[in-house]
Image (cartoon, rainbow, N blue to C red; front, side, top):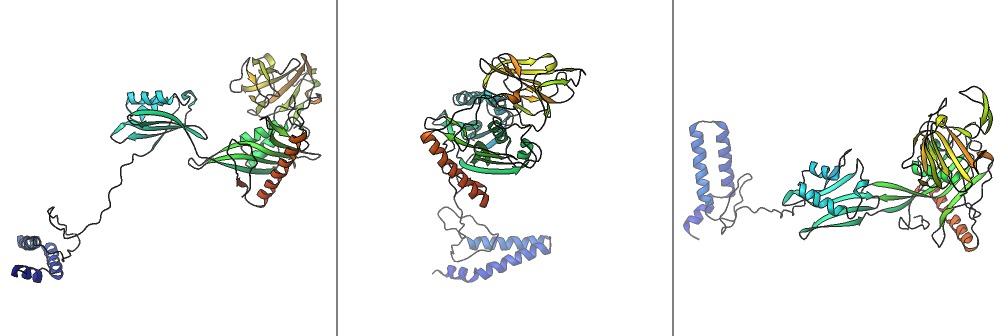
Length: 468
C-alpha cells in the first residue's frame, strides 16, 4: 500500500470524520464572525480532498451527501425502489340538473371534439336520453394528454355499465357486467295503522311494499279486514353490488298476512314455460280480474248508495266508494286495460277511467296528479301506479273516489263477484308444494340466525335460495 494511502487511512477514520463534523457544527453555531467561516471553509476543503481519495470502508455521518463520477464507487449506497408506472386516476362527476353529457365533459375540461367522439360511440351501447340528474360518470384521462379521454363509464342499470375505451389508437364501445351477489331478506311486523306505513317503519322498501299490496289486493278488503294488531311477513330477493356498495330490491318470494279471522299466503312460482305468478298453498292464483281496492287504506269513508252530499248538503246517490287517503297516496290500476280518459272532469277533479274489457271499467277521481306516462290510449297493467290521491274537484278533503262500471252501469265495488285466476294442477302443484317447504325452511333459518342469506343463483334465475 502506498505511503499516502496509509496516512489517509490513519487520519480519515470514522471517528475522525465525526469529530470534524462536530467541530464544524459547534463553530457554525458559536459565532457568525469571519474567523468561524474561515475554519468551516478550511475543514470542508480538507474533507473534500481526502474524500476524493477512494476508501470504501468509511461510513459518512448522516446529512452528508456525495456524488461520485459514473466510474466511481459511491461512498454511501442508497436503496431506492423503482417508481411504479403512472396510472391515471379514475375521476367521478355527477350530472347536474339540465346538463347534457357533452356539457359535463366540457366541465371536466375535455376537448370538445374528443367529447363528441366519445359520446358518438357511447350512443351505440346505451340510451343517453335516460340519463338523469345525479347520474355518476366515471372517466380516465389519457396519460399524455389530460384533455382527452382514455376511458368513460356510465352505470345505466344496476348490473351493467356502458363503457367507451381508447385502445390501439381508436375508441371502442361495449357493455360491461357489474359483479353482483344475489341475497334474500326477510321483514316482518305488526300493523299499527295502515299496512303501508307499518311496513315502511319495519324497514320494508317502498317498491316491495307496493308489490305486496298489489299481490294481496285481490283477496283483501283493506277497509274491513286490516286491523291494528294484524301481522305481515315478507321474504324477498335482493341483489348486492360490492363495487358500488348498493342494493337493488327484487321480487317477493313469499308473503303472508295474519289477520284476525284468517291468514293469506302467496308464493312466487314459475312453470317450465316461463309463466310467473303468485299462488296460495293450494295452487290457486292470487290474481283476479280486478282488485277489491286500488290502494292501501284503513278507512272507507263513504260507500256505494244514497247519502247526504258533504258539499251540496242534500241527499243524492253516491255511485262509488270513497277511501280516506292522504294527498300523495299511490293509486293503482285495478286491472289490465287501456286509459279511456285522463283529464279534468268537472266535480270529479283530476280523473282517470280505464277500460279493462268489453264489460268492465274502473274510474278514479280527485287525484292530486297523474302517474308517469298516464294519458288517453295508454295501456296499463294491473297494479300500475296511475296517479296520487288528492282533493281536486268538489270535495272537502283528500280522498279517492273509486267506481266500477259493468256494461256502462256503476255498481258497488265491494259486492262485485270477481272471476278467479289460474289453478295449478299435476306436476306444477307438486313442484309448488316442494317450493313451499323450501321457502318456509329458509324463513325459519333466518328467524333463528342472520336475516340476510347469500343464495346460490344468478340474479335473473328464479331458483330457491340456499342458506349457508
